[in-house]
Image 1 (cartoon, rainbow, N blue to C red):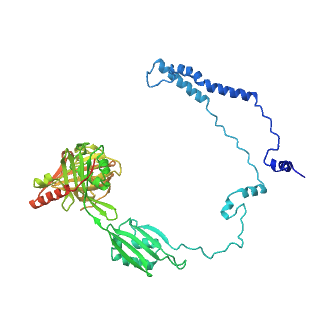
Image 2: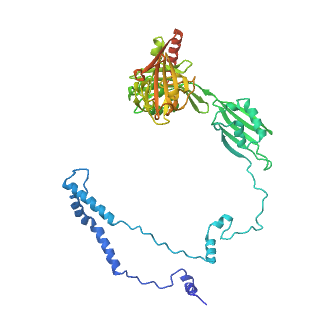
Image 3: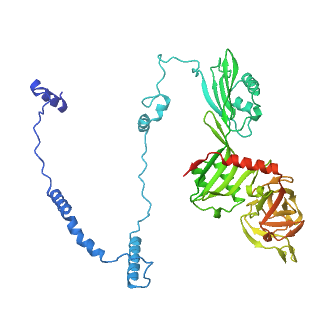
Length: 517
């Protein structure tokens, strides 16, 4: 029996080669679209041609009426009330057209029989994870050859980093080295550098070879790292044993000088000129101790010299700041040179006067406002009038407390009504005290610099809330901290030291600058 499809196929091939591929069914008569479709199409064509001409008068009419005035202008006028009414009308329309939040009726669940569930399971993709290509798992045939074990890679390359508080042997053990290889590596490295002196963050390139059995660790093939800036070590396996190759790296220690014009930001200008962040921060800190930033105007020049090490491989390592200066109209306004064993900065003017000057303007010990001044007052806890030997700063619990200027810690601990207390000796009979701390960050005998964190705001001792009690001493007696603005110490300088200072300053300022314009 022939189906209608078979009959069509037979008719298509009945005409021989001449009629192959040609249409054998009669063409259909053209279908006339309904009248409503023609009307809709003509309407669209009409509006597309005449829409700008029809809408232009309407737009001009609405442009003459201010339907949405600004309610922040002409309060109480007729225009304002018209706009207010428009706003109320639009709000009412929005409320009237508020949609309904009635729950939607969900479609009823369809119960699936076993056959339907099997059909859905066959169409799922989960069976593909089990190696099937339709919904049923295919068992292995004779074409599958079972392996006793998966083949291993002939070598593994990995990178390890010595973390904080970690040790060199533990890092090698975690990397997968055998105990015998670790011992040999420590012996080889110990001849060049102490393993405990390797800096944190040092990266190691490790290559492990093929092992003889799965129960044995992989042998070390190569270990390369850089324990120092000027030294690279390479350990390789040769002839069945490990051998060390030490490669010294040439390092240029010439200081780097950066000079440029101050723009809107001194920090950004110095960074744009190529100065590293550490050198810029030291420069700003040093300048701030001798000159207010407000005095440095755009158009002035910054001038800084810092120690720099440049390896032959291209890496650079910035060191301490050596010189900080400010230039205005081609003349130096401020010149500060690091001098002496303490690493402090000194100006040539002070050295030329035959004095070694250290001037530390007292900074605010905490970021807060003064709530109680120096003098007699009624104690908030004891209830009677007594001398308030300092000033109080209101600050949040745990806010950092800074040293007002350079000094040495003479007291750090519990101090009666002061609670946790720190006293600094600044020399010349001048001292400062900081009370009611929640936590102390220094210990007795330490030397601190101006702006260093020495503790944190608290409410220990006789205190009603978190604040800082700040005192100042002169000759062992308390004085009003607001009456003193600076501490000046002078020490005589011999002519030989003055000549050496001038020679060093001339040598530093003769370094060619990487000028930025």
